[in-house]
Each structure stands twice: as structure tokens, then as C-alpha cells.
Image (cartoon, rainbow, N blue to C red):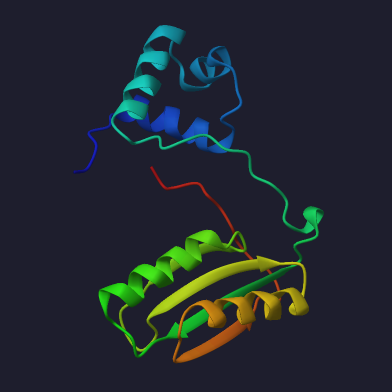
Length: 153
């Protein structure tokens, strides 16, 4: 179900998406309101699941994770047990930042962050040793042009 949000809710979400570490005073000032209504709205949006959690965004390259691979996976397996095991393996791998099931010729796409090509190969070898995969294509991102967590609210 789509959340019912008014303009003030959207402004609050925009401010939080840019920097959720701001004080309640700063948020209220930025959206042109007072603290109590802003706090109540944030609390409501947390309770209704609009705001899932607050995290810190880290610089992958500063942490030595310089290689970003997009991994295209095709499988000939479509049974529930295989899918359950595959999802368990993906969720257990910290290198996998995103995983999507797709429509079309490719079954899954993964976004994988690792130190370098050798680290990717280690990830790949572990993946195929844990679950059977028909075909894997890895694409190395040469340049990150746009990356954001900000949703258009």
C-alpha cells in the first residue's frame, strides 16, 4: 500500500535523505516547521515503514574496495529449493551489495564490491562452489557516473 504523504512529509524525507544526522531543530528549520510536528511525522513514517532505517554511507574506495562488478547470472534451475539456497548464499556474502531477479534472458543481476579482480575471482569461486549456476557474466564498472540512495519523493 502506498503511504499517504503530504508536502511537509515529502520535505522532511528529502532533508533526511540528504543528511539524516541533522538535529531535529535543523530539520524543522529546513522544512519551515517546528520540532514537535516534525518529530511526530518522522515517528509516524518510521512506524508505517516509510522510513526503514538510518545508516552511514561509506566511501568504498577509501576502504580499499575499488572494484565494482555487475554480475549477470543465468540458471537452468528454477525449483524452490535451489532458489532458497541461492538467496541464502547471496545474503551471506558481504560483497553483494544488491541482488535483483529479472525478467528476460538474464535471471539475476548482482552488484558486487571487492578490492580487485583477484578478490572478485575468490567471490566467484565461492559462489559457484555453493550453488549450481548455468552461466555467469561479470562486467567491471570502469567509472561510477551516478550513485544515490535518494528517492524522488
